[in-house]
Image (cartoon, rainbow, N blue to C red):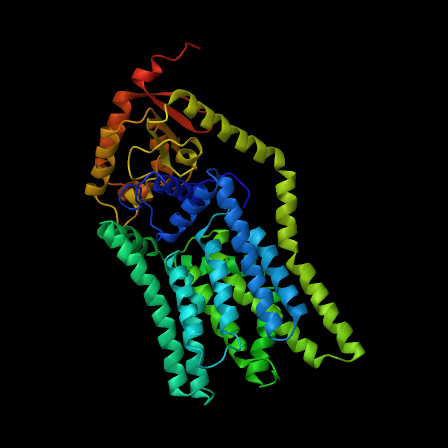
Length: 493
């Protein structure tokens, strides 16, 4: 959370920065997330024009999410369950949140607020359903697959209706309120997008690209889910809690615990797992949406033990189980922290290297001049406050099967040639885009021949433009290419 912005965080911060300069996402800067994350970043940068403004908002959002979890369990009658659940939630936030400033993190307070509003709410409180729908709309326009809780919220009343615990009118009221709230947010966002004249660019990036992005094999999706199973500690505390709740519901031995909450856990966790696995890729922040329902599972399991294990022996057993499982749940975060502390010198070196790159960019470019990153976004456009010469501040769109095209590559090359950057930085340190250095590019394709057809062949226009107009001027780990007219003014080594 406190790291300098890079990868997704750097892209979001840069787009927020450009929004404050009057530019628009999708038209002026390409990315494939729905728009709210960019405007949250713009808000943070408006409050304080450094990444600290965004960090302050992250702390506020995370604190609010943990507080709503505590309030939910307290509302059900157990402050101790609330503290236990909120503690689990916060530990895993620190462990899973990667570099911070992720769409999943921004959605957490809306997930947990919706959870708080829906647990033991008055059955005919229409405004509550509308508020829950508004939270759903906000989550959807942060990232489309973050609506797992609301899918669950829509399914649970149907199950209760089949049991005879809900009437049709109550079902229609809750579903109608949910859709009204969701529709209100959708109407506001789409009206704004339409008023700016960027509807086609918005739809292309947010829907067309993302459908191509999730077109991966089923086995990749399974790997993503299994990795999350381990990462969120589902083999320990929440795993035990989930099994206990499953057993209590099927044996009808849940006592005074709210059936609505139990069903939210039983249905919600598989829904969240399925949605987070859609991309078939692995990143810690993908699993953040699992935390609210997992925290609820822990709280309800604790309440079940509180109500049933009340004599001295079983009370000790309850605390013993919680102690053992809590220790088990902290193993991975502890190992993660220990490794981070062990590698602190490496992290310092990495960030010092980034600082040196940023200083070089600032030294050799004027504020109105352009700077381009090729490959993985490293946050340099934001850190240096230098504008990219093209909407494609990173170029994954250019080699995504099912989305890219020669026309898209031509658009990228034409924009770069029209606004030639002073410096191009090669940060293609992955199996995604090939390096700019011809020799390294040849070796890349030798090692990854499956990627040869992914980048349209007219990308050679960019390579030719680079070779004709730029020369490599350094970069230990990452190559720097400077425009030849500017490189000629550098002092001789």
